[in-house]
Amino acid sequence: MKYIRYTFWAIVAICLIIVGMANRGIVTLRAMPEALAGPLGISPDIELPLFMAIFIGVGLGLLIGFLWEWVREHRMRSDMKAKGREVDALKRQVDNLQTEKHEGKDEIVALLDKAS
Image (cartoon, rainbow, N blue to C red):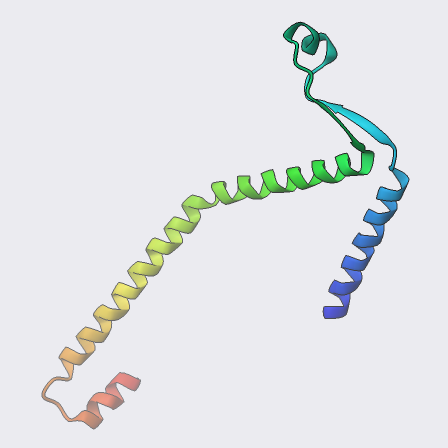
């Protein structure tokens, strides 16, 4: 199983290197269109290689997706935590009831009862 994982990540790395080498040209990324940036007097733009823009876009997309899923699953995680606390409380209650049931009885009979 380890070899399959290492092979997969090696193929991913090779693909990323190939994409990076094929897209080394410098591009200008603008946050606002030129028609809107002119009258406002702000023109936030940056020049970087195209492969960096691609990788940053993919990374931000993954980060936003992971964050979205984490927020979406919050209710499920809190429900599971509440159910876990309820199960623990019920286990403690069953243990208490079993010890109360066997008070004043022979210890061996209590152990046999508890095992079954």
